[in-house]
Amino acid sequence: MLRAQLQGRALLDSLLKEEIKYADDTQKVKLIDTISIVYHSISPDSGIIYGNIGLRMSEKLQFELGKAKAHNALGLNYEAKTQNPAALDNYYKALSIFEVLKDKARIAATLGNIGNVYASQKKYAQAIENDSLALVMYEKIKDIQGFRGQVRNLGNMAYVYQSMGNFSKAKEYFIMARENARKYNLNDEVAKNLGNLAALNYLNKNELNLADAINYCRQAIEIYESLDDKMGLASNYGNMGEFYLAIATDSENNIKKGAFAAMGNAALINTAIEYLNKGIKVSRQISFSEGLIGCHEQLWKAYTLKKDYKNGLENCRVFFSLRDSVYSSANAINFANLETRRAKKEKEDQVIKNNLIESNNKKDKLIYTSGIILLLIVIGIVAKYFVSELKSNKVMATERKKHIDRIKAQKTVLKDIAYIQSHEVRGPVSTILGLVQLFNFEDLTDPANGELMEGVATVAGRLDKIVTEVVNKENKISKEDIESDQADNI
Image (cartoon, rainbow, N blue to C red; front, side):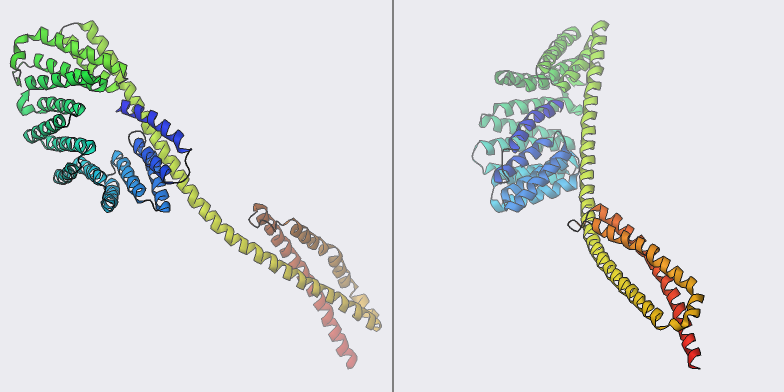
């Protein structure tokens, strides 16, 4: 798994460099869909992000094939996260589009993907049903893609039966897969299914036939050597070592050993060590951590059986060291996935926050504009009223010289009014006019405007109190005038 991730990362780096070269067209959609697929074995959360980008671009371009491939990529990533409902939803959406496009190969592949999800849920009937439909579709495709699809789908069906514990049915389908691979000259698939048959004979505890397992494994190794397939060699060398070791430790004769029973334990253990060392050598060449871990674990057991405790201890130490290292790497990947999810959540929260800010800005614009207009109206009314009152007072002062004695009695009141007019009113009015000059009318969303409005509101409140005080004092004078006139008329 770790090696697959490393290979995927190398491919991903190459694809990401290519992405920037394309405009937002169908070619870029295809590239993004591929990036999403590669991510499913490295960082499914990132794969989902790219899958959704590809989906949105495809919808914008009305590119149905890209849309279907995006759904398929999303299905793979959700499947990797074991979010099976979301995986199936996307696979079925992809399938419906591929059916409209009459794309047989992708219909078959998607049916196979659906079968895999059902198998992981232990819904074996649905898994076999979809795999069978995929097989029928692949049989209609008369090219290498169809031939390879047939073989792989037969293998998938064998895995399902194996998971069900139906080993005879699983063996039947692995053999069918192997024979079809031979028919179409797909040697890598022949070797793969020989290896599967070997493992099946080892896993079937009711009928442990390691003689057949070793024969299948040996045939697989011969093919992998001719293909120079180091991954296949590493896996099968390790399996061969484990098979020989299992025969050597079978003290209750539960295993069908065939001719290998006559080898004797010492020869069996030495043969196991030989294959395990080959597995280690090849695994190191390709940085296959899982192969190294498995081989060192079996060597630890083999050397212990030989009572070679020095080599046993060394392989034990290496086994735990490698296992812990891979565990740490897996944790690092998990942490990276968590970080991706956190970043995605922050991005989504930021979008919501931006939308809220935009909405609030629109409201603020309306409030600011309305507030400025209302403020100007209030200032106009206050100014007009104030000027009117001043004129009225002057006229009254001129016409009523005869009431000098009364005016003298009221001089304290008039003195207060004059002080308020010349000092207390001028300050707030000047402040308001100054704040208005600072207001940013070109960008009403300027955060400083809010502070200015708060300042204007505070000063306007103070001005209102001052004007009220002036009015009260004027009313007092008016009342005294009326009383004086009434007294004069008597």
